[in-house]
Image (cartoon, rainbow over all chains, first blue to last red; front, side, top):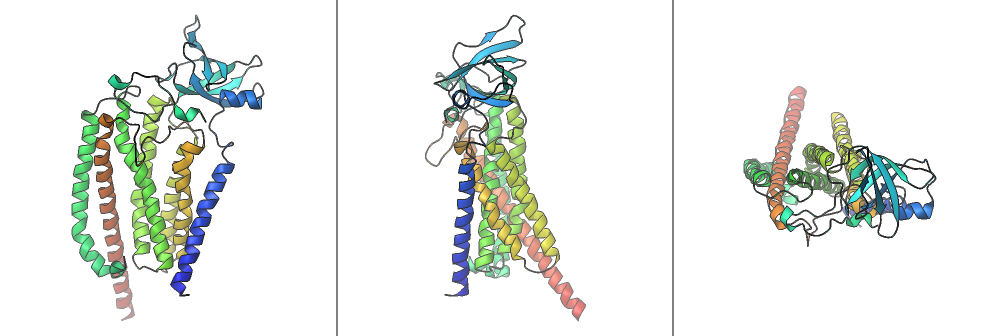
Length: 144
Length: 238
């Protein structure tokens, strides 16, 4: 075997090992590196009240209600199967709508309501002009 | 590739090619960004802020393509000892870092009105930031080792190992729950409507040609500098 071929074999093995290591690390981090919990996770794992987490889900249709003070909003976050009530006092992002994705930062109170300190809107991968957008705004990546 | 083992032959092609790449690239980029700013319709949800995608998406792809280039050049340096490979890897690093920085900046500006935040430590954003740090580390490492004046294979090994971040960036939105949306465009289909999508190929090709022109310019500069140094050394010895 020529030196050049030896180096080529070594390099191919090294690249394969590097990519394998990256993929292994990613799949190991799969749960830990998730950016938010879904309502289903919350029900399954039993997040203790008071622990700071992010909760991600779709805003359930028809669930948004404004309190009398005008700045407090309550709604239900759902992943299709499970829904949790969320309360938030503050300014919502423009993209926050019923039927669209959101991520809330905050904690559960003992009663099971999620008290959000901050709410982010989650955008999906579909882009279209306004006249085409008749259907509901769904975010595929929330379903995982 | 072995045709270019002779730097003089490489230069005779690279010298006339550089202005063509640069000017055609600038023209295509102007068409793509101009059409994206003034002609395409706004998005139904994001409104006008969707227009940042004509800069954000190409710079993201080219930022990643840049490191793929560094990895391939580094492999060619390690395996075939190609004389231009190390020069090419160093030439790609600076525009690659710049494009990655533009991608992060435009993403941040888009994120403020869309998500309601400038920055979040989600999988896609964090892995892209790591790519920028890798570029900066590569530039610093290459500069430090070149100062010692000998061919340094550790830089090439760093170039190969660093490519491990590329699959992480690509799959981050599919494997992890992230704030960043999933992939809109694949080879076969796009979830971006055609009326919004069409300027993107123009700005993508334009920014690619500008990238290539900058790489060729930097390679020529580095080869000229090597020549000057060699001549000075000869004169000092005489």
